Amino acid sequence: MSAKANPERRLWNEPIESMSRDEMRALQWRRLREQMRYNYERSPVHRAKFEQIGARPQDIASFEDFARIAPMTKDEHRSIQQESLERHGNPYAMMACASPEEIVRINATSGTTGTPTLYTLTAHDVAIVNEMHARKYWRAGIRPGHVMIQALSLSMFTGGLPLSQGIMHLGACVVPVGIDGGTQRVLDIVRLTAPHAIVATPSFGQYLIEEAPKLAGRAASELGFRWFFCAGESGGSNPDVRRTLAEGFGAKVYDHTGGGHAFHGISCEATDDGCDGMHFVSQDHCLLELLDPVTKAPIDLAEGAIGEMLFTFLDWRGGPFMRYALGDLLQVWTEPCRCGLPGMRFSILGRSDDMLSVKGVNVYPQAIANEIFRFYPRVTGAFRIMLDGPGPKVEPPLRIRLERGALDAAQLEGLDAELSAQFRQRLRIRALFEWLEPGTLAREAGKTRYIERIASSARDEPR
Ligand SMILES: [Zn+2]
Image 1 (cartoon, rainbow, N blue to C red):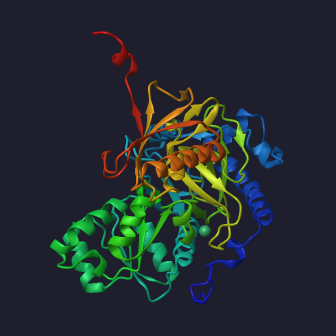
Image 2 (cartoon, helix red, strand yellow):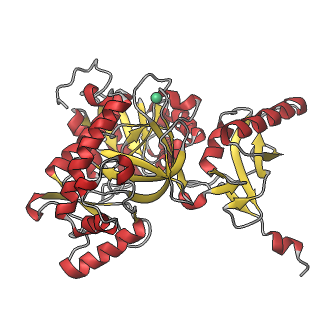
Image 3 (cartoon, rainbow, N blue to C red):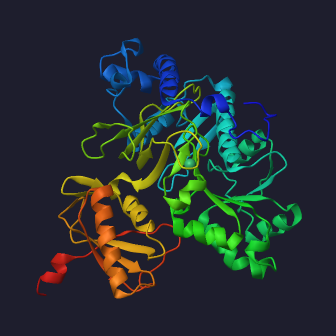
């Protein structure tokens, strides 16, 4: 917590971040009990959730009990915001648990569709967000004396100001240039401030690699960055993208998530030899649950478990979320990480509506991507899942088109067998691989669609 942390220290907050799983569960439970009481007393929305199950906070005796409370979906949140706007003149009053005098910041989610989701923070909550940013960057090796350029949007997006403030909290120096003023301005400020690290979207990074020679008169690798922190897009979880950035900038590449609220994670040094996600650094303020996306039954947070994520903010005063469902799919790992840093890890696999069910086994495009990437450079990493129906139900084998690396026929046969075995063991599905030459599949900037639908009816029916 101290702003004068010993730079030799491995973790920003040793006592919390190195807690055992049981100690963390106990801390979460103490905070959850307090939070339930607080939410119930202060927000009609939260109170209604308890009333739906005929319970008061003091009746909830375990995490299992707590799981009886209905999740709040994004759609539900939007309609609450609408009602709040009509009744109170703003969209957050009904969820805000603190009084207006205590609210010091209103954040919005990036909200790509429709009305943004707004939530409120007190000074206490802002301090938590700052703490989480410090924990993440400290793990990556950022220390006081390092200069970091913030090249995300500085507008209301949660990665803007909250992130810059978090860097300052660690004691490092932030240059909050933002990308709102254009690429040339970012490069000019890089020349003038010589930052050690950059925080940007992976696609902006790839763009900089291409444009730096023209706009800055030198290669991206000569800009002096030792760290590239990916944010704001899913690309940072793609080893292909990370490799491009690492080579292009000559920097260590980290993926991280968590803008202005309580769910934060950062990848580690071990990520590149196994895609085992991001270390979850905010468990003391964020209770994570997983649900089966179809049946909505709870799923244990066990090694490799996959489910739709719910989160509940703990020790949070402004607009605490309770069993909030963002519609994201998460995979978690609870066994110790090869990097030696503590804590469970997670990987965001995409939207829960991208899920496939192969003979009753749930499988997600990102999980398939992760398995395929393990075989790089024998594969290029580019692939498509071929579906001849609408999903999510798929009859095995699951058809996957993918690009081979430089292999002869015998090596390819061996690879096919290894990959099939890996899919059976790790994903528990039968797959059929259709091999393509390298470079056959289109590379798209930003979000790659892994699923390709073949219109089987249109193909089979005579015209
Ligand atoms: Zn690790």
